[in-house]
Image (cartoon, rainbow, N blue to C red; front, side):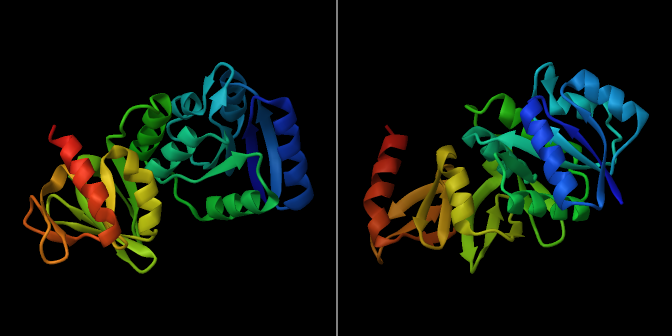
Length: 249
């Protein structure tokens, strides 16, 4: 039997999650609930759950305040957040799992299954999540990359380019290091597009700051500052010329 604590400031949402857990997960015992940072601190001082359902935005603070009060908390955390594009972006950059409200039963099951397997997110990943949520209009400094066996924190400016490898992506860094990540190029293209990364080919995503020149001969390709060449698809040529022109005005 696993134990759980729910921290959710909306009473209706709290009661709904309690009912869903009671109905669907007889192997999870709810040992406490809270609707604020203060209430959560009182609950967690008495007993530590195996799983902590943690809402991000609370009336008297945030879920991060609770994690700062209990830095050695060993509970598996399932973050719960409202459907918000900025929140989703923040979780993706930090490579931390979350459940969107309103959630489906499938979403809840997947989150619980992942929580049982996961290791507590590192302090640095939680900082990426907190900072990105705090200032969603700012360009994130870092991104967390899921490899096959670990999660690597990378500075955004250190990424030269990304290349598709089937349903996976290879990251090429300024240092010459390569990072193989088990997510599609489209996933990262959508995430990084607002931060001067451009999909120049079906298989290539490039950091615009790393481009030295666009060579129009031989079908068209980009010459990068590190000496590498990246092919450009025919339908992307006009967009690339326009983007590079704007950068150099």
